[in-house]
Image (cartoon, rainbow, N blue to C red; front, top):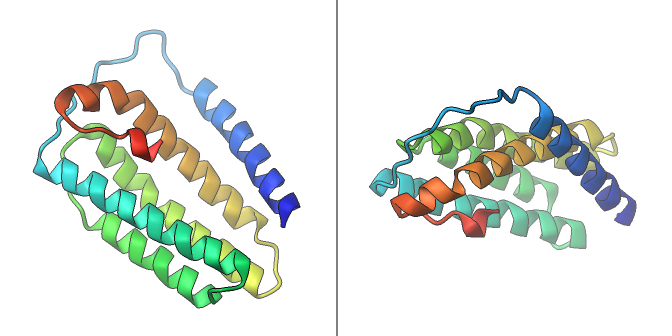
Length: 154
């Protein structure tokens, strides 16, 4: 169990380094951030979905939840995030990657429950999560200036 956690952290750090160094130009374009009602609803919804999937994942690792519970929560989270409609360009990017992140997490749990290798799906999930985190971190100052605080999501 601990070994899986260490592997996940190492993979997350490695993928973050790759994403941080890939595709950067010398002069990034400025993004006009918004913080309308739909942006705030998206952020609240995303935070609730992260918490729900995280809670079920923790309960599963403790033996207090069934794999189907976690998989169902991941599917519900992907559906909920996909159905929201933020206007902010960074939040649209989060909306693009987050459903796949949740679904890959569900695939990892399904593989683990079947006694198969959960590593590839977990790696994809954490890689997508690292990308989402990077987007939110980069957008944090602009979103905060527009009135949306994403600090709790980082």
